[in-house]
Length: 207
Image 1 (tube, helix red, strand yellow):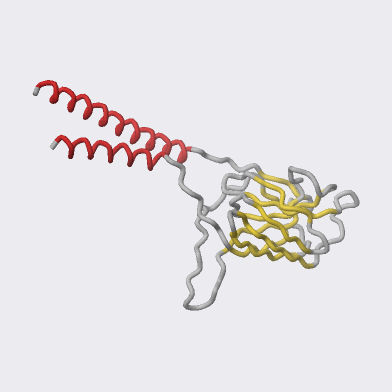
Image 2 (spheres, one colour; image 1 turned 90 degrees about the horizontal axis):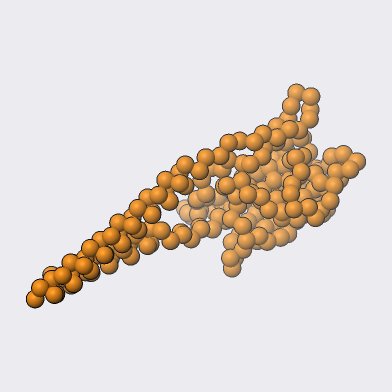
């Protein structure tokens, strides 16, 4: 009886720890059709997850030689579901081959004055989200498991033809509630363990 009670308490604590541990991210393999926000060409990219990184191949068509006389370099970026952005690299002769370890949901292209910056400019010319690979009828495609994102910045073409950006609001309420639930489960498990240990010791002393 005592062994069964102690085993149940240990199982409860372990279950609480499992809920509190970070869950492994599922890999998103897919294709990305980047469409223009300014009327400047299009790009197609394929993403394959290999050995912990995403291998990305991109090809573009009909990109303008330069958006302006200063901004004549096109740079590709990735963005995750929290709005974090990371540079992929410069598109040279309409092509890009690179890797990234960031689990992303979107690729976008900006016009830059330099190909080595760490922050994208506001001139977003192409954008596209990761879509599942279509292997054909009868073959299951791995679904895109990342939730619909709230991009940190999105390009908007105004009536005067200029590109502006919007800053959408982001809410961390869901994450906070999840964290609270995990902490509560862990605390409950520890409380049960302490009560069980004291009960076991009290009964043993009374024998």
